[in-house]
Length: 135
Image (cartoon, one colour):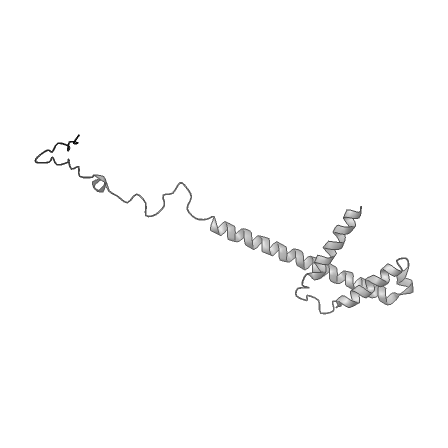
């Protein structure tokens, strides 16, 4: 159970650090980091019924959740675009020649080029005996 709380905490930190992306709605709420931290502290201080006791914190908290959701969507979109562009580049690289097609520039010799002239070794005019050892 504590593992899930830690995972949720770290995922929240990662999403908060993501860029917000392009503003699609001009009326979208803008929440600063300090306002979000203040709202989170107020929520922790009084978890039960804080909307009735602190309506401003509840309002800022709901706006922070909206910004969090927008950032999460933008991060997922960025990840999707990154992954799809990488797979397109990989497919473009794999469109090269396969093993069944000959590579250019190989096997360009003709049959005449492959025939090597055979020269027999020339015999020495006067064979010489190996030198003798004295002894």
